[in-house]
Length: 633
Image 1 (cartoon, rainbow, N blue to C red):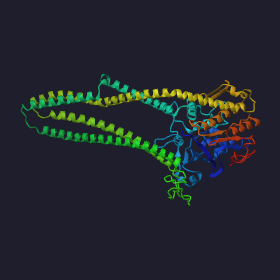
Image 2 (image 1 turned 180 degrees about the horizontal axis):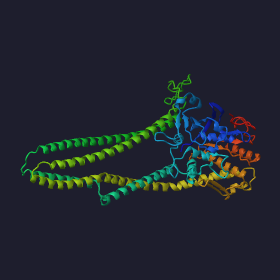
Image 3 (image 1 turned 90 degrees about the horizontal axis):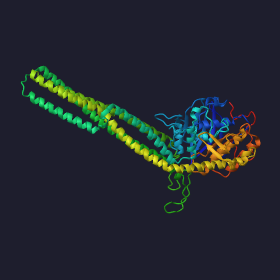
Image 4 (image 1 turned 45 degrees about the vertical axis):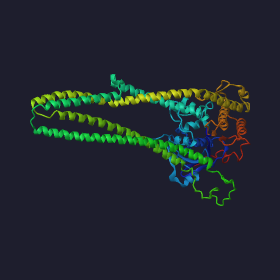
């Protein structure tokens, strides 16, 4: 699994086109230093907001609630992206995205892309685009709702506004905070479910929904058909053909009898006959047109299906091309890869060291996001086109059947107006009734054709999907044990790291002194973790305990390549009850655990900064004293 990496390079808060906060962030530990109530927690909420987190109206604070927007330059797997989001308290405004650094973004305002919090028929959501940039694809909860960046950030943001006993950032609206959602977030980020097994479970769920729909439609058709529900289309076709032969025989028999009767010319009947013949010719042309349209639409649907496969291949190729460019595009050759001779020194900075050609002055990855969005848009438009063609095909098939029925009735009428004599009229009347009865049977059979075709289609689909579900169940079961082993391994590792962190604390909490000897239970679904069977301790102990678990998430992701945790964490752990000695001990424990690690970013706040962290290497901005606020308007 590709390691997921998120890094914040720069963050700005804009008020009336002026930046009232503009700081750069670095790899590793970033400390926001300052007294209580100077805006440190507000800063972290705004970073959470620009990355896709949603803040309720009551979570906004003055003066940032009166600012214009927030902006951020970030890196996702070493790809630089610039984000901007308008500040609208209590709402979910769109997030603008630019494929490149903040400096380029300001010069190319027209090249920004807008993404909403939910997907539309023609455009992906912000979370979908971010998931694609991370290489995650789209993953769903057990209720088949797509996971979002808002939900992902809930596990990587230790918020001071949330309960100290909870694991996740607290949701004000409890309707969006189900146990299954929390479980899905944790399993996804920590890789507790093998990716193959995860995809198979999602596929199985979709197949089960499809199966239920097909079975419901099949049962509805069976009720309509009644005793004919076992009849096949071939059976209907055979019955219709046999009835047509009966009609031909009856007409021939009738004409034979009429030929032996006296006939007298009648002008009105001749005119009527010509009128019917003209009408039959008209409907015959309509039938021919409908038939040609049906063939044309079927070819167009086939072309759309081929185009759909082409788009899937292009999206896959685009992803592979980007990965190849990232892996090989920036290789600098000192020796020729063919003859191993040393290459001449390149004079110009924009000259290829191998072929000596002038390199383009734009980044080849800049168009990736725009191209991916365009391909996905084409994919959705193609699906809409197929759906419209299916409706048009059904309409033409119905028109084809209806016109055939009209022609049959006209032909019957034509065959019955060949004479005006009493004997001939009697013959015509008798045969008209017999032919009409047979034609009525054909009409009824024709009415059943669409139903029987759909019934056969549903039966085929049900058979195929049932086999697919059975195969998926077998595959999921075979992966189940491996998943359980990994689940136990990761949870044990998290528990050991967190309890070791607590045991190395100040010793204020007696149970923490022997934390590694206590049982540990981490329950993401219930949003809690128990140490020695206890959930809650003192408020300051809970803050330390929560910090221990969150730092273990980051450490686990640094050593475990199967996690999707983005090596990015925000920790705002200093509650009011946390004294200076204990806060500094937590800070130093974090520093000792991470000082030799690379490839991560941790953002923390402190009003009681330890000496070891109060240096330029870790600090972001100055120390904010009393009445020296981060945000001033």
